[in-house]
Image (tube, rainbow, N blue to C red; front, side):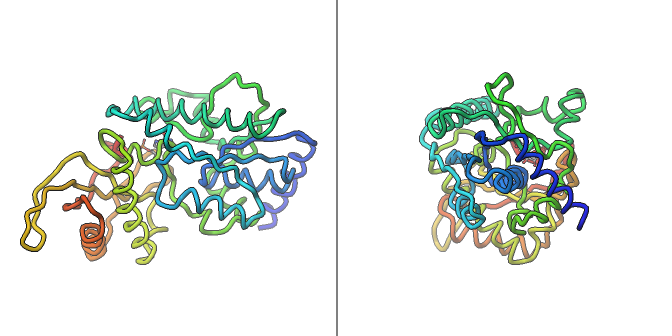
Length: 319
Ligand code: XMP
């Protein structure tokens, strides 16, 4: 696509001119948007880009490691911060979904800036992966229904009045254009096709209190679900797919024994933009296979259910 190539070329040239020899920090999540911004900036200013990846402890299994490796293959050194202990600490005893989101958001900002301060004395710019729809929504906040339903937190959603100039190279692009741009500048396919993942991570997929043990259980179940979706060639057919750990126990039987363990819900949806969504009509044989694997392999779960609610009336995430 020569148009996109030209666009990318000009964008990189512009960034180079605007930034000069200054330093730029970027909160990297491993998602498509921040990854494209990282690669663009790396092409423009090389190691003056400081990408920071905050491991909240609430990520998918192996995710932190994979993000660091993927970028390292692209020649980009990611500053990895393991802040998981802090996040578990602030989440202790918290059950309310909004309270979880708020605490995670504040802790993230704290960790991100204190880390940025350690990495560079003088940082002039902060880069963000803001897209055109975010720009429109912030100008007409009444249109952003979901913002009123949940306090969205993401790596791009940092507070105003910061001592940085903001760089938003994607602010005139839609999601599909960001993917095209990413492809043009050489971001690997598997990074371009990742499902969206919420800023508060697995914390909003564990109903009730978030503990290390619950995260571990959920990570294992989620890993099986995603692995099987890929094997069955279904991963790219859905907008998002994930597991939710419920604070509900039910009775089961395994061999000759009675079990009394947690229920796990699987959720998969199709969508254009996340604003509305349909529950995905995944094949029964597939669901059967995933359910059996999860119950056999994941300790603490003896029942799997599939969420058959669309958005609206439900939201995509459970919290
Ligand atoms: P809901 O659950 O509101 O989610 O239907 C719509 C889309 O947004 C994602 N989501 C978030 N993304 N920070 C994010 O960056 C958040 O706090 C957040 N909450 C939900 C959700 O995964 C879905 O794709």
